[in-house]
Amino acid sequence: MPILSAEYYARMILTARMQLRRFGLDDGHNLFALDDDPAVMRYLTGGPGTPRAVIDSEMLPRFIDAGREEPPMGFWAAESRVTRAFLGWFSLRRADAKTQAVLGYRLRRAVWGQGYATEGVEALIRRGFTQAGLERITASAYEENLASRRVMEKAGLRFTRRFRLTSADLAAADTSFQEGDVWEGDDVEYAITRAEWERRAT
Image (cartoon, rainbow, N blue to C red; front, side, top):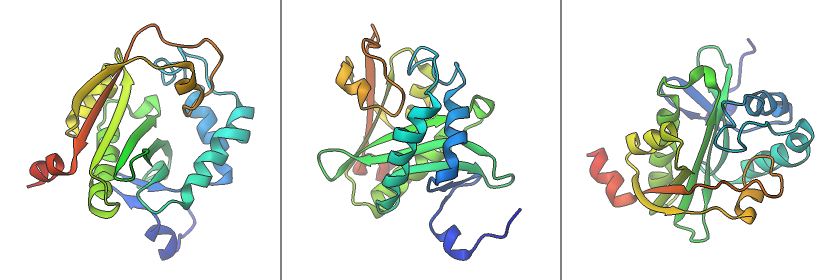
């Protein structure tokens, strides 16, 4: 493995088992392999993956461009600290209100059920409240995606509302969208405030 510079590590977010780094031009194959798993995409597209052309022309450029945001905002490629294998990604994006942000995450099926999602989410929440001036962080999932909902609950987020995604919502999501692919069910939103996080942290 190459020896990486101190500056490279300084731009990372480190957790117990992961290093979250900015996306680069060579990450197209990582995103394609992640989205090519029907199990990963089950609650996003019903199974079909994101076409490589869409990843290269739309998804990856958006992820890279978000790297200009001040940490911990933006998209983060998650790697094993031991093997540097690509595990998936996490995101923290500001909402319309500058003191609010939205969490996102997508991990390879091979690491499901091992606590990686909760570990990454907790790291972004902590930095969001302590470094980015956030007052409220939300995350959402399809109502039947119980595993994702458990991640939110373990990280301290509480259920706030049930809502129905529109075609416009899906078109703006971080995945391939085909007109008419709107879930019949609802999505659910979870949230945590700075005050709630501080109480958990003490």
